[in-house]
Figure (cartoon, helix red, strand yellow):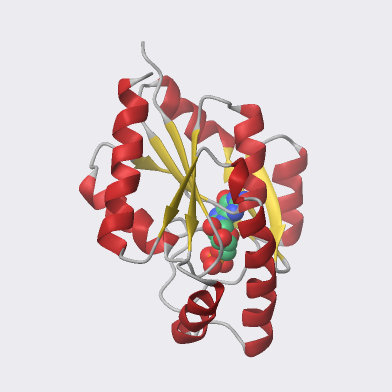
Length: 188
Ligand code: 5GP
């Protein structure tokens, strides 16, 4: 049976990739998702098992060290990782899987699964990213500073991705990702 396509959407925090991810799932109903594991505490409205599996640091390290994660990364003080078994099962069953993960994780996945398609979402500018992060109101000033510093180094690595999409207008950006997915499936 033909394997599914693994699509990795990455980019700096606050760039809007979470919104793009939700839109892609609505517009492409055949796409499936992976629920990540994190040591970050839940934000208001986030549900365990839906947005993330919220686990302790000990549990996370145990999962990572026993090979249960496809990739993992520490970003601004918290661990994040993709559970391996559910993703591989879906791909084997021919289902496409969309991951929304950070740059370190995306690079690990590309190395382990070169057939995956990696897309980096860029902000129109770093200044615009700062405005979006502050506007979101979920982080302290210090956290915004840390996320922006990380964003700059991530943007420098965007050339390692298969595709780059600027999220200035969300509809246009989502449309570009859909074209990338469709073309990748055609040329498989
Ligand atoms: P947030 O704390 O805002 O939910 O996510 C912070 C960052 O972690 C985002 O860039 C998000 O894409 C990334 N992230 C979420 N899940 C994973 C994962 O499973 N693995 C990796 N490497 N990064 C993740």
